[in-house]
Length: 78
Image 1: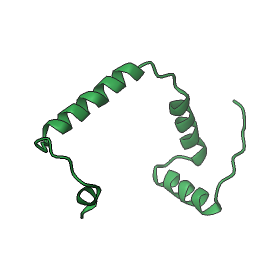
Image 2: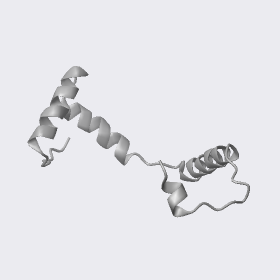
Image 3: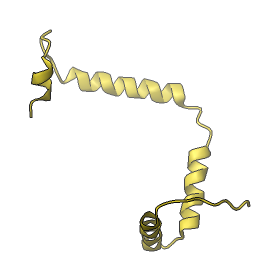
Image 4: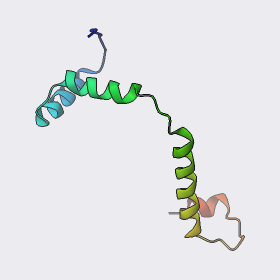
């Protein structure tokens, strides 16, 4: 296993260590998990894209503007 060095804000490192302790692990082990997931080969790109498009189509099916175009001001009203 190869050692590497990272730089990060000291407060973030301490919060990350505290979170790792809560999970009864170490920051080093959490990083190993993260890098394994991050570097994993993903062959499901087209499938994920198709699922995302299907979800967007489903969400759009719940709304209807009747063809009306909203103004920028209307879309940004709160």
